[in-house]
Length: 189
Image (cartoon, one colour):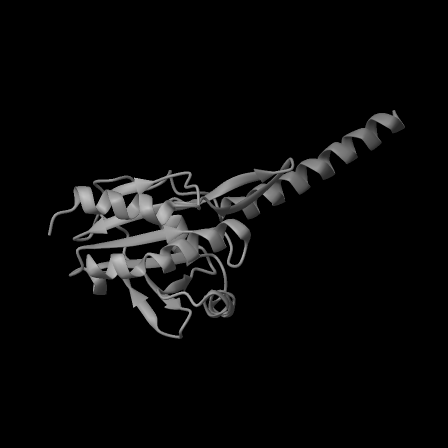
């Protein structure tokens, strides 16, 4: 009888811990998937690496706005992607296309990242991941059997306040060219 009581107590304690963990995760659950082409682009206002505030609506007059979400500043894949966009910025500027990088890092972290690699476009700090959630890229992920929440590497092309293209499961190397090629082919002024 004593073994049954101890077993029930352990099971109850485990269940309580599990519920507490689930309630913590419920506050960061993704909001129904990645926002798709054709939808209104969720507006945002975020702090940039240079101390300014960038508002999506302020870029509405551009030919297009590229908003790329990346998991973490100064990591190998994110560095390749950011440096690719940096190296292609002359082409993006020629086409009147703004590029914004968004990560769940602090302003200090995106500033260090931008300074280290001489990035020539705004890196935006979404430390509370609220913008990532609006776009549906804040997702449950898995690494080495461990579950955690983070940004799914995703790029949105926005024109006139609408999402016109979504690149999911982005491969960092060469992505800037893929996006540039799509814009050249599909978006007329």
